[in-house]
Image 1 (tube, rainbow, N blue to C red):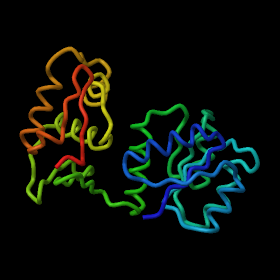
Image 2 (tube, one colour; image 1 turned 135 degrees about the vertical axis):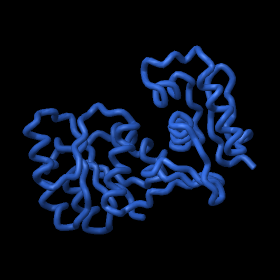
Image 3 (cartoon, rainbow, N blue to C red; image 1 turned 90 degrees about the vertical axis):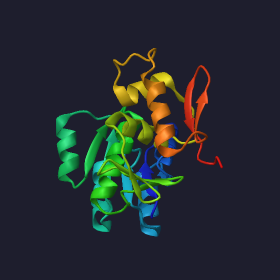
Image 4 (cartoon, rainbow, N blue to C red; image 1 turned 30 degrees about the vertical axis):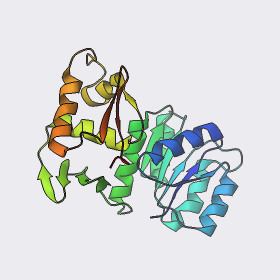
Length: 220
């Protein structure tokens, strides 16, 4: 698998994108100008380019003329919200156009979608002893299918995408049940208990008192 190239002139934003995509095990390289991006594209291959429009030298639209012959898929990631800008980006050959600010989950979903569509990444996620197929929303453990409810599946996927990170109860509620969910009830704890039982992950999914839960992939 080749790395993802992030073309963004603000290092703080580029670093945030790298951290976000690191949650799904993607390696990123950064370019903070169009010329630096062109040099990197000359020297190696990338599975995807996340491209800002407003760069200090060559703008992202002009850089598309340089990227297109390489066959590398592009997602524009920019603060420009005008419809004509979105249309122009897509007409130039970009696969997608994401407007800043964006949610981490949206970026992950869009990136995974393009990588799957272009055949540059396996659709399967493997963590500990399970295999997840996001396209089919199915889970197997040591080759045996595991029956999960839709909310159990969404909760598992959220934990897997954020493995090693403590997730607040309110965050898990919002991502799995929506912003209007009530984090004071026992729904989350019940679903966590079911996941532990169905997967045998009593130690892997750890409760962090008064905060939330964490999936610890290094647990024996």
